[in-house]
Image (spheres, rainbow, N blue to C red):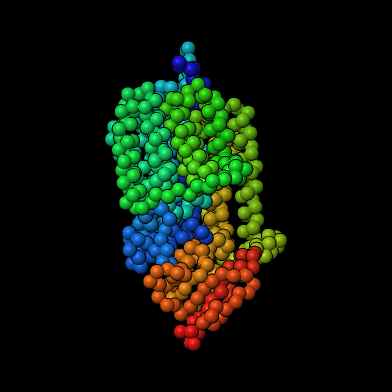
Length: 551
């Protein structure tokens, strides 16, 4: 049974977003955070530690180690980062070199989301209502406008902001997901591009630590192909099956089969994560599912809905893993794009007003803190920063200030432009949310980057430890997190071995975490205790030197 389309779109409403502003918006989103930033704590610095070890020849490329410990999952992300570190060796900072390919991957995700939505919007079932006397949107113009809206929805999504700028395996997994939905979307109109995309997508996910999710996505893709009414999409199932076999081979070759499931997921925590992490895409995606409920088996709804369901299910099973949920964002953005032809004008206006006030307030707050740090006026914001980050010394950067001024001026112009024109464009309600997120991110990564580096990097702790350790020292690490070990190796230049690692040498120094005091291990002499200046807990890192008698 063919249900009537809920999309009623005029020719004027189907105008596309001008290309230069869209490219500048994507650049303002992607580039901040690539330059001048240390690897941040946890997953970011851990991944960089493996890349750094491979690039400097300190580990076998098939068996990378940090502190004698292997990585979790596939090796492709570490190979990629290490290759770029070697490519730019001696020319740029290794951390920047490692981020370059991941910034390119983020650009690829944005492009693949656009083309996915474009091809799905070109299908017959997705087309708007034809008017009796003409004036309806042309198919190509309609598809471009919907695709522009999908990219804006992805840029506006809060969950992509930090994770999308890290050098972690999840960004390769996200690229694989985007490749898969593009392949399914283009399977009915293109010949070789979707075939190559699906053959790359699923093995890429398996080689970057998500083989189980890749297999689930393959089965979902097979179901979408078999249920499709398009003959070419039905035949595309054979290529999906070939990609599934290749995925199994890659996962087995990398020994990447693992499932980090929690038998008792905390549903309240998962719901809370879903609410903010996927905002504002999820309410628009939910509206799409409701308004297009008669088309759930059509490809323009089935492809993004099914693939998003796999990622959301993985998030639930993994007890609220934000990194698993990130894989749903391109699909949710595509679903959000299809909400635009059915969105009421009052809702669009409410989104605009909320975005203007919320992101203007965020920008103003960042500017006040920056001015306070640089001039001391007003005094309270700077005092609060110094209380949270004792020892931080503000630095002035003319380039950062100019970038922030340009971004703020662009935001003010955009608010004025949006209020006066393009009241009918389909993508109008997502311009300000996407631009507001990009503005906030750019201001944070320019004006407040020094203090964020000081608070979120392990470098301040490494520098303090460096006062007590000779460069290149051998350190035995007991109880330290893998991210700390990676920071000690990559940022400190020390040789670190986790306790009880096989074939570890006898080191002259010992490092372990502890509270206000810890007993001195037998055979060791206390040297120092240090902690990160922004830590509020009583957790210290203790340094011991092997005593002469114990040596």
